Image (tube, rainbow, N blue to C red; front, side):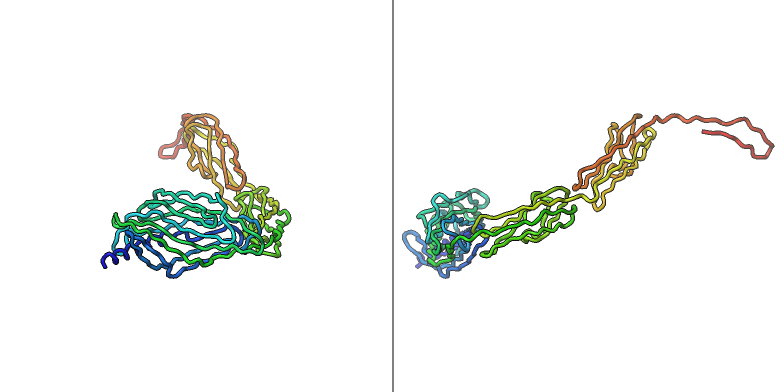
Length: 415
């Protein structure tokens, strides 16, 4: 009776582990049109083999599959098991889970086979941030098995993206996908081994019809357009597809241009700098290769950035000399800066157009005023700065004077 209770706990612990680790939640097929189905298998029969004894338990298993909503005869399509993060418990029912190994999840495809050698980037999983091998294999040809051999300790398991390809058959047929089984080996209390298998019912989760080829959509990006910097410019794109509803996308040749609605053929584009750019309208129906067309967008700078250093100035060595710079840039706030080729010369405020410069040495220098608004081309202008010597003052007391006692006598001194 005691052995039965212990085995039952082991089975429950192992099942919690494998089902917690079944984090390959979605099979995803890239394309414009996809179907996604989430299904919970109720009371899946799971068995744990412990020391020659078999313990049966039931556990709900939820699987999500995503695949194209249709394919064409001979079309190669991709099924992707995306990256997932799962926590593998370290204990269950009072028993310590020491390690996991041979952790796997399998899926099956009917009415076609997975293409041998078509698995892409099985990559490396991590457990608690440490690498652990990730396996992916086709075999038999209608099954893909994903897993981690281990052993590895309990913790956070992160699995990478894994994709596999299959090829559609004749028109009128249908391809189905379903999950098969979950398995793992769990070591408890450092010495007790439980091998767990959960066989998932063979219910069809996703059906992919194979249909005749539809003609691709037609795309017209519309006539060339022009406008001003930072102003919306209308685009008159048109997409036609009588068989499907394609996904429409606008892209620009420069990231300075953004679209009000990149998924709408008729929209506006706004560019933050002048130039001639290419706008491309693409449409994908999920069956045929994407179709695209381009239009040219010319963007003008209405008022260019203007810089005036204010002309030549002169002053005395070691005294502030005023610079009369002017920067004009309507609608924007440019970055402004003064530089000078005189060693030791300093500005009161080098970021202000009107400022003063003080030089420690007599001479003639060139001061340059720079401005950049990130939209227009950077601009600059120069002003000559003449620094004169500081001469000693000259003094005169004026001519001799005379006057009456107790009366004011004028003096004509000058400096």
